[in-house]
Image (cartoon, rainbow, N blue to C red):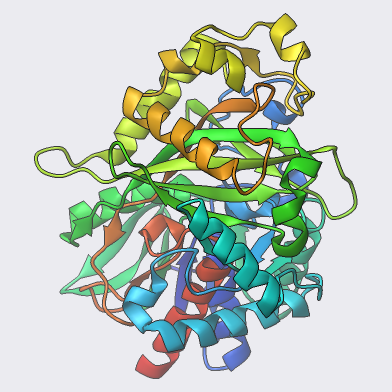
Amino acid sequence: MTAAERYDAVIVGAGPAGIFAALELARSGRVARIAIVDRGKPIEKRRCPARETHCVGCETCAIMSGWGGAGAFSDGKLTLSAEVGGWLGDFVGRDALERLLGDADRIWVEFGATEEVHGPDEETAERLIRAATLAEMRLVPMRVRHIGTDRSPAVLQAMHDRLVEQGVDVRLNVEASRVLVQSGHVTGVELADGSVLRAETVVLAPGRDGADWLAAQARELGIGLASNAVDIGVRVEVPAPVMEPLTEPLYEAKLIYYSKRFGDQVRTFCMNPYGEVTTESYGDIVTVNGHSYAEERTAYTNFAVLVSQTFTHPFNDPITYGQSIARLANLLGGGILVQRLGDLRAGRRSTAKRVAQSVVEPTMPSATPGDLSFVLPYRHLADILEFLDAMDRLAPGVASDGTLLYGVEVKFYSSRLELDADLQTQIAGLYAIGDGAGVTRGLLQSSASGIHAARAILRNR
């Protein structure tokens, strides 16, 4: 064992949670040697074939892994609201969460995020909330800072450079294989090549791409796990003017609805004004996603409509359930399916000719025209159609025949580890944060979880 392999803290995962934990520890000046390991590439070397042709099943997904995590090529939205973005408030309380979100937001701005914040004034918010109520929906007004898919990499690279300047050992293309524990206390991390990084503090922040690995580690170490819901749905694409009554004052309209037929929660997610539909890979499956840019605009707006499903005994594997539906869509469409809403209602598959008749020109031309009713369970399909009809009262045109639906979109919310208020496991010195730990599901809360864990580490030293 060499001195270079011993650290005061080791962080597994270089997404926002891991990065912000490292920033907080390094700034304190009290943690001399810090290492971050991630199995992905540096941000400038992350290239995804699916963006140009199709997914080729890379061993390490460039969209999900590497410096910046999945957030590096996301829409770059920082949601400045404690009501959305995860479950960190369950651990720290609402007031502390709001302070943490504010602290995380200031750091994003420090490293280059835009200072512009989108959000309605009080009068407009009240008007839109009332309109949503009359449509039997709940609108969550939010303030949003939009970095943009094009600007996010530069902001994250600036964080990388600062950490390196502060002496943090950033190890990319390096995979952690297991967490080492002795007598109830963490002792380090073993890497895939058999080498060991020794540390009495380890922070696990593997992101969504590393959620299965983290769950396996938890089971091996006897750490409790609780399943979160899985969200399954479609990405909707409409002409941008259709959504402007909502996107102009709100930028992102967060709408929540409970279906009359089944009582399921249905919601909008990741709204991208003037954006484009993209893909997201999870190992051997491809799901749909959406982006919008700071400097470029399309003529369309896209957003997800997701049905939240929580399972009860005896079934306890919602991630596999969601993966099975995504695989079926990939099987039928060779990737992503697209269908006109009018064709779906008429009970017929969309063809290239029918899609061409839509007022929307697909921003994902590689999507295969098909029939989503062969993929989505009846319950989910009924919920989505009911939701779009209700939303049409707020934004007339959303439920038109020419609206495009891309499928499927699945959000896998990782199993939540059993953690205390500091986000520490029952193993002393071992912390778990971010989306991969089932604590958060968005950029800002993920960043805030890293700050919170780092401050707890400093208190406990």
